[in-house]
Image (tube, rainbow, N blue to C red; front, side, top):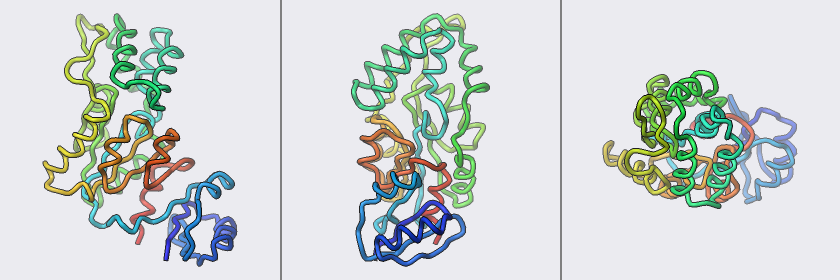
Length: 273
């Protein structure tokens, strides 16, 4: 028996879907579950109704989840921080194009980051604070998800190919447990156009997951990882459960769970048993 998580309470649509797969409907507090003996392609339903549907992964024990590790830019938060920083240098469109191609996997992440950071040389560091205070917001459902995970004593890690200024501030303000990102080089209160230390790329993100597993003495099988770009694929591959949140096609194809339309709080639906 397969269980489809319909991340909505629209009973009429749920009935249409259940008829299509000869399923039985079970209403839950925040969503509807459809139990069926058939295995159907959920992509068609997602595109037709513009709503999220996923199979309940029977290979993952949600009650035993130990860690939730999220990408930052465009996953936990609403922006790509480097694009917004670039806006203060009047080169947002130029940098955003490189960011988009890098997240799609068309460009080498390290080289793309070096190029983009180089274009920021000379900007006053005050723009970082302005981006954080004026433009950065946690994506819909993110605060609810964080509070939920804390209530379950699940540790939360934030990892980013972006910058420590934002991951550290966000972690502090939201009470997250761990964070990792790139450190911008600063001299005389201005960005130098360089990064201090090794670049946090796809491999570094995966290593971060393994490091947190070791620190907490848990298996990767008990870890949920969420991301949206190509540089999240390696860490998603080693996690027990991977979530693509409003993600690039390549990420959607690989992920176990896909949230394309609703907020991050829909991840909570899987724990509702």
